[in-house]
Picture 1 (tube, rainbow, N blue to C red):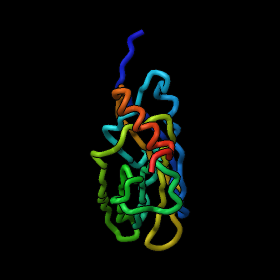
Picture 2 (picture 1 turned 180 degrees about the vertical axis):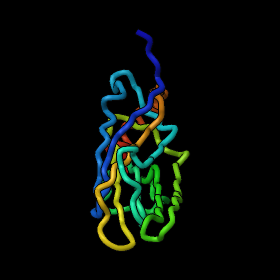
Picture 3 (picture 1 turned 120 degrees about the vertical axis):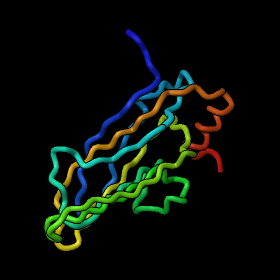
Picture 4 (picture 1 turned 90 degrees about the horizontal axis):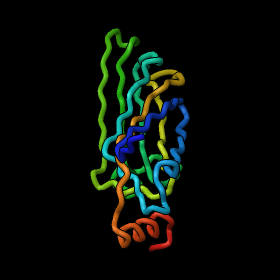
Length: 161
C-alpha cells in the first residue's frame, strides 16, 4: 500500500445560537515516537449541502490550539483561523452571501494535541436554526529536526514559559 504524507480531514459540525467548541483530536494523524508533526496548509468552512441557507444573520468560526471559552482576537497566538459568514436571506426579499476569513501562515506545527473549532450562529431577528457546516483541513505530516521537535513538544505541553 502506498503511503503519502499529504491528507485532507473533513468534519461535519452544527452551529446554533449558543457558541460551542468542537474538539479535533489530532493525535491519530502523527506518530509521536517517530518525531512527526502535523502541518496545516489550508482551512475551509462551507455550508453543508444538506443545510438550508440561513436567513439574514451571521455564522462565526475560530480554529484555535487551546480550548477557548470565548472568541479571541485573531492577533492572539492561540487563533489559527477565523471566518465570518454573513447571509442576507428571504426576510430581505433578496439573497446575498459574504464571508471574511484569515488563516495564519505562521500556524505552528501540531504535535500530539487537540485543536478546537468554536462556532456560533446569530440571526438578525429570531433564533438561529441548527445549521450544518463542513470543515476541511488540508495538510501534511512533516519531520522537524530533533531540536525543533523537542521545542514544539515542550511549547505545546506548557513546559516552556
